[in-house]
Image 1 (cartoon, helix red, strand yellow):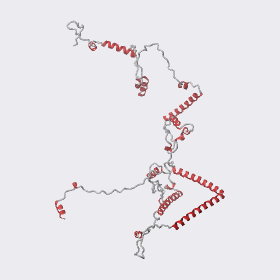
Image 2: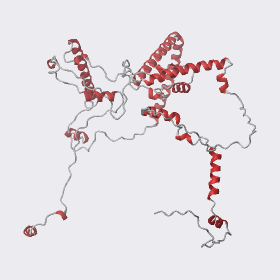
Image 3: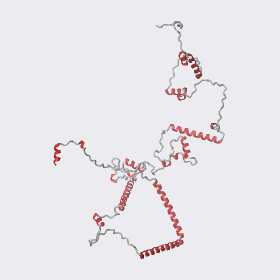
Image 4: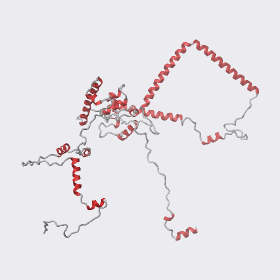
Length: 446
């Protein structure tokens, strides 16, 4: 049961007043109840921060309305309109403290220089009017780009995926001589043209002339070719084979057949050569030793006279040539003109060859690229249908050769299976099985 006390006990009866020291501030806080003062001050501060806590009249609607069901998307939209973002809540001013100085002189700060915003909104000069027109045109182009980006998939594919073109052809601003290249790329970047990337011109340089990644095969390689196409393919294969045979014969002629062949006996006889009719003569080699013969005074005098005569004859010939050249100046002018024309033609030919060599297959490794064999079927191998045709080509080899031809991978040759060296195996002494004593005794006797 609960005991209800109706009367408060008298503190003077039965209890003694406790006296404590209040010498320090901490003693005052400890033995003095100031909670009501703290609560009052806290409420005062709260009113200064968020205003007075005024009671509002509560209207109770007696009519019960059915709650409207909202979809999750509608809930998110409603929440975004009513509730602020959490990341921006810290920036809101929740203080309701009034300005202590009512009559404050608010001075607007005057910006120094031009007011760009006012010039744009209220254009006065022709320059600003043209700039606004250009900005409007730019915004229209930007809206079109955004609309295209929203629907990137088109119903028809009218673009050639294998077409090799220069991206600068699509954007005339890149080829404008009055605008710098950096400014042109900056403009395209603002137009949301992400496909254009500024790279060095060397990356766009074509290293090979073959534009197509997949070249059409020769019509003579068909399973049922036209006789003319098949004959043309056979002639092409024959010409290539004749060229290979001709190169092999040329290498054999300038290397193997260039030197005479002798037997080992003949070689030894040439090294140690003796006269067959007289064996008593001393040994003589193929190249006899050089003897340093001294010239006498008469021989040296004759040699000096011959040198002087040769020099005089040379001077007479040069003088005679100068006289003849004076008489044939017209012919010399024609010769000089002809030599100049030949030099110009030679320069053109060299320039043409250098340009042609620029697009040839480069040597990326130690081996030079060589065209593969021509895939050709003989007349008796042509079946007329795909089922019975004799296959000559290989798709994997064809793609591999195509990558080598386009300077994508270096040229390589199949080295085959390499021979491994024979490993000599033996059993260690610690791993050998112990021999019987009979065998040991037989070894000792032997």
